[in-house]
Image (tube, rainbow, N blue to C red; front, side):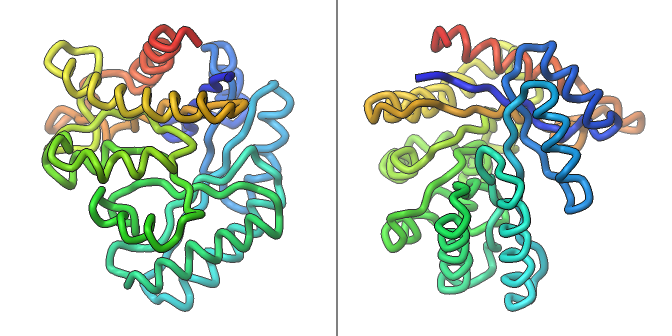
Length: 268
């Protein structure tokens, strides 16, 4: 099984797609994960193709009015799918929508996937239907075709724990997680300040064991690829010093570390 590493465009908005793609390629990544607006999607496809990079595009449900939210989500998924990315990583629904409403959006995504042939995965993320390990369990039960992007750092933050008391919930999610966002969270936040620091050794290893489990599952299923986005975020997610707003470390360096850490761990 081949492991394909992606770099997020998030945090590189000061660069053009071309500049970012060249930097990503030279750092040893295989692709980019990009949240591209409708006016930028052609460029994202062209630039990644020209630089020999794979492309994941992102979709976001927006708006608190469900009917408007659903229409925009549907239109956005169809438009993004028309660009034929490797797959779509979707931020779906809201934590305050009902189960029935969120399930309707998930079913809509499944219909678009069948219509277009482009896979749609739903990221585990605060504020979405998938905001916590227990909250997602009923969706997994009722919607067995649901497939996830695993960003369990959010669940650690929501639960204020490393989820040791709900291993069954995490294992059910691992069983349907097909893409990894390898950000490391902690009980008081979705992102440690620097996963290279010794004080975060346990946090890093806890997350890495979840990622190992996803990888092992896909290997046993003879999956051709495992995709991983090294998605530590920029200032805002990355802690900053007061007054100066100076980030406490380099987002770029941390993401490169995560790529190299998993390459070494998995001999990938």
